[in-house]
Length: 378
Image (cartoon, rainbow, N blue to C red; front, side):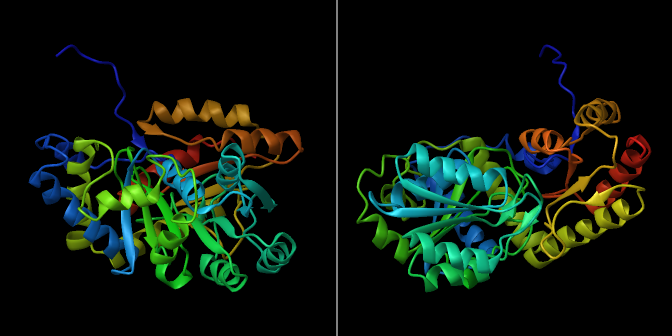
């Protein structure tokens, strides 16, 4: 085969993420027919292990969408917000804003509750917004990838349910790295994807839905085709996907979920992510002028955002990306739109460190040792 000049970098961005060699190798397993018995050999254990990782039982059904976490999120809007109803989109960053955009472009009556970047959802403000807008549906981000903030979705969803609304949760960058709290929160639908904390290539959106969501979807018109959770569930009940799946990714997912559940262990996986969060916090504490960006008590277990000292620009952070590429890493210079806005407002920009999926503490330790000397000085 002709030599292809692709760099084999270790990804410390916030998705896609590092893929361990065993999962790359699993991509060579045989193709299969998605309506054949071979399909069930993959997807039946995939769905069972997803439930174990989610901490849910038979009161939740699993849907696997061809697409991404955004595909699952948009399906939640199309399937669960009826015409004339208000959907309240709670945003602590770019991906909360995305959920709001999905509601707007799908013609839904949408209101938005926004919080300052780096800050978590405030429960009193949420309760006030619920009283003001009286929404039928509320969306909230569990783990905001642009800012590294984790929301207390149990408290949020309890308030949402108490108001009589359905709660829809975006758990894209958290699921597989920390407890999803799906059963505890009582959310009607929880959306996630393969390419972040599950340590898999992109290609599938994943949703966990309750009977409450199924009942509501039956009352919503114009749910679309692939965005219709009822149509999806018709196939999911047979351990299938509604549309033709990426068979290569299905093989990789089968291997990876078996590893997570039966080899590494779910509790061990979550503990590893917590340990890496602590490692990065210790690293940042030793950098003069640098500080953690996300609100204390709400810092993500899967990624960390770091505010740089005065005098360091977005341009400097982008230049560092190329320096780290030369060391064999893909460095994350921060979420672009957020950094542009921070600089416009005269605030210091941020960079991100992804420590999710199959990144190990040893890998992270080496990365931080190489990153520290390369960072611009205050």
